[in-house]
Length: 263
Image (tube, rainbow, N blue to C red; front, side, top):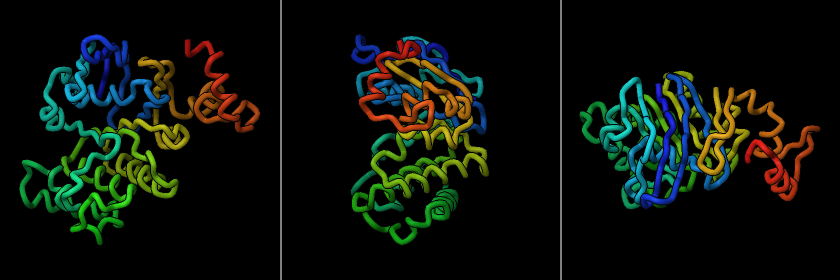
């Protein structure tokens, strides 16, 4: 469905954000994109969404296709209309607007009936928001704001939903609820998902396939289960030694320096 081939991104025409990144997201699948801070994960999503210009970035090389259509140099608006919608890191709501107004912003260009159906669908998915529909979104909790951000993206009826760190800063129970809802959307409605997530364990538990990035490049890929079973991934990202003992951060940092697969 979505394919990236040798993607290279530059910031300010000099700084290389990602280099030679290739990945595939099959229709109906959940694909996890993992890596440490600064690995280039968010840059990949911004390149797909065509919003790099906001940070003086540009696609310098490579190709992005969606359902066989080249979207490498489309505008952000054209990408959304094609069915690719991103939920950015940090939620980025219109803080002074109500929950319902934020949702309606995601339904721009749709009929009133379709927009109303979309709002009912979001409140059905996130019942926690029902009593807050007329509350200013900036006054919501972090978890509620994340629900609104995902709901706003769903208002556009995406075929492929991209999420950038949806569990960031959230309590474990709220994070589990949100990721569980995303998994249900994929399973029951066939929405394809590209998930950037720091919580590697949670991401791989719900994903079909995973890619691990370091220093702007894809260093490892495979089925979610194969990555969960990989000793390198377990030590590096899950903090668990080969005997099942959880490693200290100091041990993990030392392990990072000596692992050749990251060289």
